[in-house]
Length: 246
Image 1 (cartoon, one colour):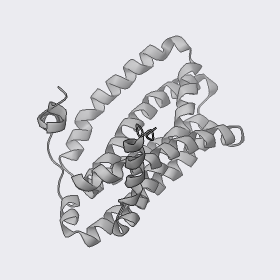
Image 2: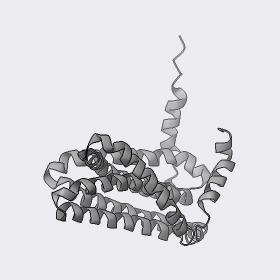
Image 3: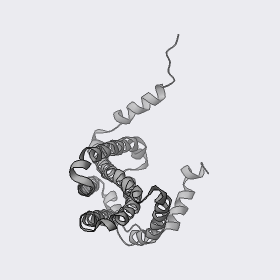
Image 4: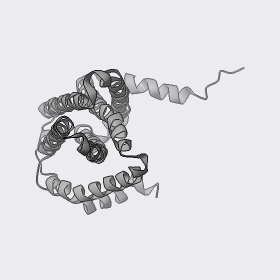
């Protein structure tokens, strides 16, 4: 009887994802994986806190919180687009992550200083903010990856980078489960803040390393991003990968 080879292509692809990494790519790949690991760990520390705060005021309010999240995203999109049109890629990521960290400090202060009567509203605000955090932080990460890796490298390496993020998500949830009794929700916000700062440091190291070996990438990183939301939608629709699925 011939051997069962039904799963051979999948197994072979999983192995070649590692074996096809060139030696010169490992430092950049490792930084990208650690960057995504830290980012996802930071978010998944916050996610259980977000969910608990969201239901603290009554589970019946969850539809309103999701509606508020949608409205917040719609309101922030023009502001984010204006920032994109006026700054470089590196500065865009740096400013965005610093603002997210500043918000974490604000919620830490609110949880510790505001009276109990205000905590329900702090929790609702945090629910909306954490949902927006996930959208913008992860989108910025993949924007950096699109600058760092060309199309050929992306096809080979993005799966490994995503694996780093998956591991970070698992570790982040475990950190919250293990430390919530010791540090409390407010203390875990500071842990997430530290991880976000480390993720930003990884981004700096990653782009600096690529720029040192690729002057063209340095120039791309120093360019104003430009464009608008409509430009982005137009480019997405015109993409061959998207058009074949429409």
